[in-house]
Amino acid sequence: MKTPRVLGLALGLLCALGLSAQTVNVLLWDDSYPRALMQWIPEFEKATGYKVNIEILQPPQVFTKTSVAVTKTSSDYDLVCVDEGNIPLFASLFETYDKWPQGKKFPKTDPKTVTPAMLDVAVWDGKLVGLPVNGNLYVWMTRKDLIEDAKYQKEFKAQYKYDLGVPKTFKEMLDMGTFFHSKGIANGFGPFNGGPAGVFGEAIFMWESFGTHFIEYQNGKFKLTLNEARAVEGMEFYKKLMAISPKGAETMAHNERQAAFAVDPKGVFSMFIWPAQIANYENPDKSLVAGKIIYSAPPAGIAKRVSVRGTWAANIPVAAKNKAAAAEFVYWWTSKEIAMRLVEANTVPARTDALSDPKWAKSKPWLGAIAESMKYATERPRFKEVAQVQELVKKYWVQGITGAMPCADAVKAIMKETQDVLTKAGY
Image (cartoon, rainbow, N blue to C red; front, top):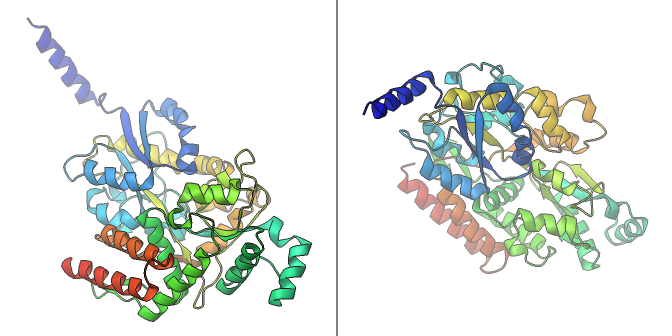
């Protein structure tokens, strides 16, 4: 009859000793970067005695899962990764970095080791609410084999009166893409029309490049500041790029873009890439163009050069059950040793010392392009209602660039409905 009581006391003792807090539940986004990291997690488990339970989902599902699984009073996860655009939505649910405990096995990561262009990602309302873990922003890819072909060089110069090469401006991007597309050599451009956050990034890329901000924080409030005429110009230009894009461009997301650029024998001349995805394009077992890509900063629009930032941060919920273990995992993850391995695996961590190590000068040519792109890093607007705005921007942006509705009408709809969201939110 005493057995239940004895078992209860034993379980209570285990909890008091902290032995119930040995599993770290982690929510990651799915791409080559976290998958590279996962292969070394057994080393962390062996070094610390902690067990790491990983759930890896596509980015839109990460947002949805975080929305329902993390609150101020409960959390299914000890660590969640959040795309920078969604930090404002969840910032109040996360422990500020200054409150993260010191590591027992791995030293607490100094935020100064994070590339400055990325550190701001995890800052909200003046507080660091997590730690950026990847150096993600637009980098441009151009097919080296196409622009170095003597026949194409001669034909292009005869037609356009300047040299074929890596596009430095939007005009050159359109000219060169049109040249290859019109001759049936390659598709001219690879758009992104997948998830709302990604389409929002493309819209911001165009609008900023044409000299207009979408939403700005002024006098304590978020205000719609989009210049309508310039916004229409940017959308109209993207519509021209759609005309030289692969079949099915209106629904192209990351997998479809990779297939078009790296698997289809026809391929794509030029497009942006998130650095975390470069590994797939440079894998000769998966890509027909491995070793045939030139990386650069994005071409400049009529107003300026822009590189849209899309970094992820690791965050510990206030309600997490295993904060110390989660922090230890992040300190291991963001150490220089692991950062160097991630670079070796053709992914891009957020540590400056790993990205700038001279060891990579010849073997990782895209790192120079990433460093150059960081000079033009541009954030997407960040505010609590951003998910609503991303959805409506995607709706009308895709309709505008595909000709389903006039670009001018699409921009008007975006502006009206965005203002409705902001007004309802009290801005």
